Length: 110
Image 1: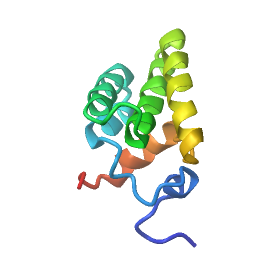
Image 2: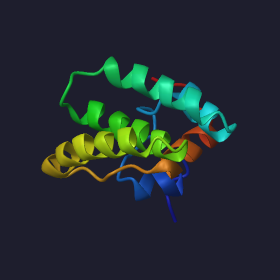
Image 3: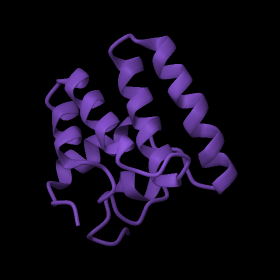
């Protein structure tokens, strides 16, 4: 059984915690406002050093959000940028379940 502080998505994403996911973006996505979630993810991504793992994880979620609202070309380019960095760093690629899990956790960012 998983640690009570970890959701199943945490374990699937290879992350010990979902604190890196902006809660407001996760809640917007879970509430069906995917476009606003994409904006918030882009803002959070831009606050990270370009090319870092933190940047790449947020870029991937941003790209997936764009694809979800049928902006496939922009989303695909975002995935190409992020996945190359995540693969090189040996980090598991997060998916949209991470946003759902973060919204459900309701925990504040640290």
